[in-house]
Image (tube, rainbow, N blue to C red; front, top):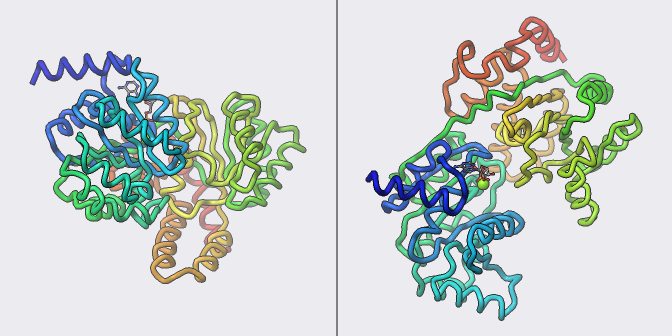
Length: 420
Ligand code: ADP
Ligand code: MG
């Protein structure tokens, strides 16, 4: 056991250059190598990738990594290939590859070179791929962003639902599922759908003690935001709006007010979108005004504020979006503007949806309203939503929200809102 431990640390150092494991990474890896099914719930930035990358690198055969986004896969493959001097340690398999490229991937797997094979779930059902994967040695299967399986998650992808039967066809190997979504409903859904009820569960706290949570009534919101940003001059921040139109309008309004801001949404020309994102990452621009299209896989450590011009459709989304602030452990101010009329609009929108989707949507909105209107510790409210108990007096970051630092004022505001 001790020898193995020393060994794992050695491999960590050798491949990643890190001297210690983060959180429960070591136990997770030991158990995966020991053949157990594993479920990892860890906030964004917790170090989930290493939980399957390291064991894959030191195992015989190829690990299949299921991931939802081609862009994320490409980043990871480049990162893994950079860890080793050999070519082809990691590959992506998808239909964008031509015949020669696909053959190269297959040859590298057969030759034992490839330790990590990244695939999107919709690629996995291709017969050519399935037939090939059945014939080669698979070490284990990792399902990243596993919340995509659940309609209760913030990023449901129907292709994820059939993963269990596909994996069963390929090989009888351990499965590790990982997500940064930890609401009990999503967790339950993932375990049931993947047939992982007996899996070992590793859950880390979702508390982000350095983030300050604040909700203001949505009155004079444009002015309020301009003032807030001017008070944080030169710092990096994100403003989230629900619609593309609002994103464009508000980015302009900020520019007119002398704030260095750019828009980002999926409707923008690809070139402009990437350029705007890069300018934000390279600090040529301070503020990015964006729809939820912005953020997945963005790792800018020193985002100092996340403002919600509009409240998101679930508390889960709120947590993920605010989670982009203060990733370096420094200050992170999360300010949301709440107007019950916005919620009514979202409810009307949901009324046109199929029943099951509508019910889930309404339930999620209810929880958002509960959060916006609560007079209790916002951190306690969010963590409760993730199935975690938090001591609002002694817990880490207990005083870091409007209700804790300034309760009477906010209680009045909340009461006012209820009258509206
Ligand atoms: P997640 O997928 O949980 O959001 P990542 O796997 O992207 O997180 O890792 C977040 C960051 O933490 C990365 O920059 C990664 O290099 C770093 N990291 C992971 N494990 C360790 C470790 N043991 N020591 C130091 N840094 C680590
Ligand atoms: Mg990740």
